[in-house]
Image (cartoon, rainbow, N blue to C red):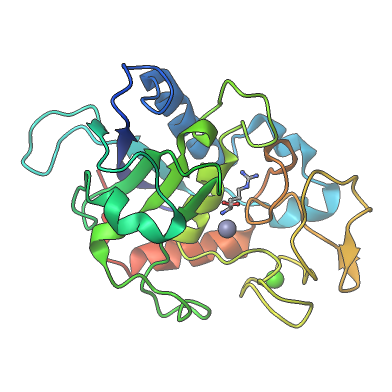
Length: 261
Ligand code: ARG
Ligand code: ZN
Ligand code: CA
C-alpha cells in the first residue's frame, strides 16, 4: 500500500502590526481551515470530488500526502506551527521573496515554509520549484533554500471572508503543486507543450472562470480545467491526476525535504 507522507508545516504570518485576527494578521481559524482544505484536496477528500467529470474519474488521484502544523520548532520546543511577525515592508511583489522570507524562516530541510502576506493583490500566490531531475524541472529550480516554500496573499489564504472567485483556499493547493514539481496543466504553451503528465490532456492555453463541461475543448479533447494546476476559479477545481501524484511523490522522495513527522 502507498505510504502517506506527513509534512511538517510552518505558517509565517507577516503582517503590518495589525491586531491579531484583523487584516493581514489573519486569525488562527483561517490558517486551520486552509490546512484542512489543503489536506482534503491532496487526499481527494474534497466535497466537490463528485464534480469531477466521469471521463476524468479513472485518473483522479489521492496523492497520499498530508500537511501537519509543526508541533516542535527546530530546537525541539513546543510550537503551534504559526509564527506572527511584523514585516520589514508593507507589501511584497513576486521578485521580493528574499525580503519577505527574511522576516521569518525555518529550515527548509525540516519544514514546509508557507508565507502569508500582502502581495498587493497583484497575484494570489507563488511558489518556488524544487531542485529535481524530473523532466521540466530545469526551468527555474530554486537554488536558495532560504526562500524555499510558498507565498500566498492573506486575502486568498483559507476560506476567506471575501466571497470572490478565489475564496476556497485553492491557491494554496495550486502553489503546493508547484512546490512539489508540478507544471501548469497547459504546459505554459500550446498543444505541443507538455506538463510531463500523460493523463492530463494537452491543452492550448490556461482556462479562467468556470466553463461548462464540453465548452473548453482544445488540442482534440476536452480540457481538464477542473485540475488544480489550471487557472480556473476555486469552485471549479477538484482534482490532481495519478501522474501528477506520482510526480509529486518522486520529487519528495528525492529531495532533502522532510516527509515524516
Ligand atoms: N499562481 C497563480 C496566480 O497567482 C495562482 C492561481 C490559483 N488559482 C486559484 N483558483 N486559486 O495567479
Ligand atoms: Zn501556477
Ligand atoms: Ca499532459
